[in-house]
Length: 412
Image (cartoon, rainbow, N blue to C red; front, side, top):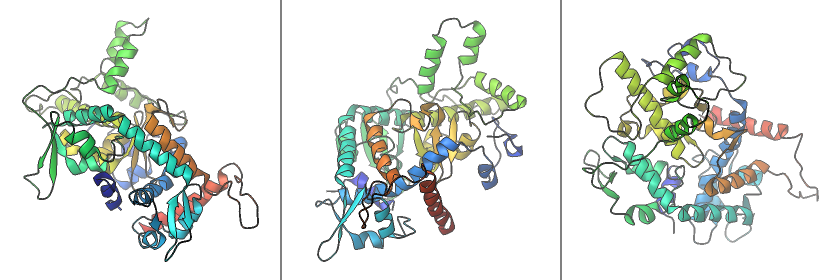
């Protein structure tokens, strides 16, 4: 039987330039499309997103198959969903392009679509890893709620990111209902037919969490040979990592150094009273917003998420800024990619050469499925008995994918 999380997923069917002169300062307007287009592009992340773009199309189809008791899907059903699933070349072309993920078997009255044994095994491995990590799921939800000013968030926003947070697809039962001493779900008085997820006993102090950025600072400040100046630089700093091809002006370096020293209230600390209506107070609140989205990304399994999904929590976190601007204004911490159906942000420090530095069982399973997606038709025996091989490294394969990407852009 399909779980509610799975059902919701199915239904859901810098080189410096003039536009960055306000970097590290508050923007007065939402980032323009031109500013996004002119950002510095990182080829490593762009290549990874080119693969993820197709992986993200595979997921809802796999969910449909896994939600069926027979673990199969009548092919006409998929064909009827082609437009919603953005299969611009049609369902048959998409399935045929991923023979390591899907298999189509003759049946009456319609052919049936199934996952291949490898893909099914990987999906089950991911599901079992999520179920086994129930304690981590509880911790992530507690941290998420503790960053909220009211200790509550819209439940539908959690459903949007259950996969990113590595929650089991039945988390409403296995996590929320199994821990009534921690979580409660109530009707949203401001919007009909919606619900609020909140911490139980908000009159009590929130759990004492340490943010990922604070853990990094502790490790850095514990190193031998650091002087007072070094410790001062690290006290409120975030880890920065710029690609070699990105040249930084002296003015930018100076502003970044001052911003790194700027004190701010951490994502789990309470905001007492109103923020000061001063330039310094505003900048401190902005740095707090950066700290919150940094921590949000740190809580995700793959240290990446669609920007629109983060924005679902903006009001709950008390962020009075455009989320996309925060990511664009701090290219040493975040990388924003526009490939796929929306903008996706990566936490730079968590990646090296397109892979997560600290892998986990859920990530490993997803990476295995991604590898099957990236194989396309390589290794498949054709009708004439030949084996399709990798063509010119990955160049021609990526060109084929980029052709499909152009079709996606024209369809938008």
